[in-house]
Length: 392
Image 1 (tube, rainbow, N blue to C red):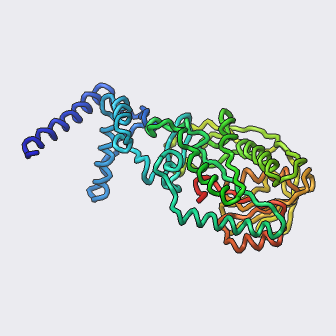
Image 2 (cartoon, one colour; image 1 turned 90 degrees about the vertical axis):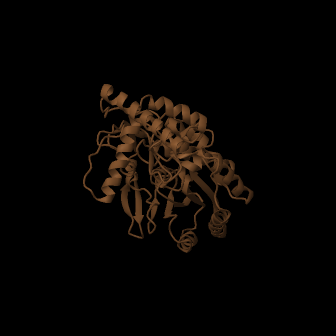
Image 3 (cartoon, rainbow, N blue to C red; image 1 turned 180 degrees about the horizontal axis):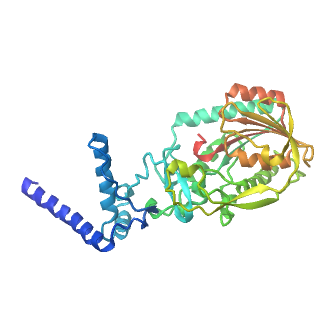
């Protein structure tokens, strides 16, 4: 292509862009309160040039590019059309869906973690997602270490995968994800579970149980975690699985929690991660236990103290943390040890209602420390719990 033709095409392109922008802004104004429907976000606002420093100049023109792009005539309709044809949303979106995104704003006030965290979007929405073979071998070897130590003390061993919110509320993802959002969400984890089951691991992944109840709030809209209702649904299904696989006795009695509901009106952890606007509206609920019984609770080897059951909860996100619970009121006189992460915070409150003794250890702890605790505590059942995105 010669220079003259190149200049003509560039000129035509610039005229089209400028024309679309100039036709829109004079008649519709800055539209600062409008929503970009294809991406479920507020339209980009104009930010003046701060200084002539190189970084400020780059930031200014990046903002100007987004400012103009968001105001092009029929933008949302054209983006939807072109994404449908080309299947490449990163060409037509401020968000680069597949690379380094901290979070995504969904529908009905839902926020979701992005690919900056364990490639969580790829895991649930991309056919190309896969784990390295050496990572899978490493996971299998670690689980086998826990299983061997459990069997050494006569305990059963089970693996529990806490589903990501991305799968349970996949319909809440915005249009720019550009696929039937629930077609792939559980596919990778189910395949991984099958591989582990072939190695004789007992694996439970309560995706279907939670999906069946998704019409009620199971996860916080602006937090990465499930709430007590979600934990209770997962626990109920988990007990059924454990009884079927003879990891729990047939006469195990499930104690269903009595929950009270309250409103949440402020963004939680995802609000800070994504950086939502100050005017972001939160319409969400939380739950608390009405069961005001006291248990004995110890953290990191401290003396046991009487503690209301709602306050005796695991802190598995902290690598050096462990805690032990004794519930003399429990109907099931069993000892449980859970190697866990932050999803056990809510889950442990339900566990404490159902077991007479429980020991919680962060799964970020050294394996040797976990082995030592298993040998000393001598539980009836050892559970390795991990949130889905980090189960690798």
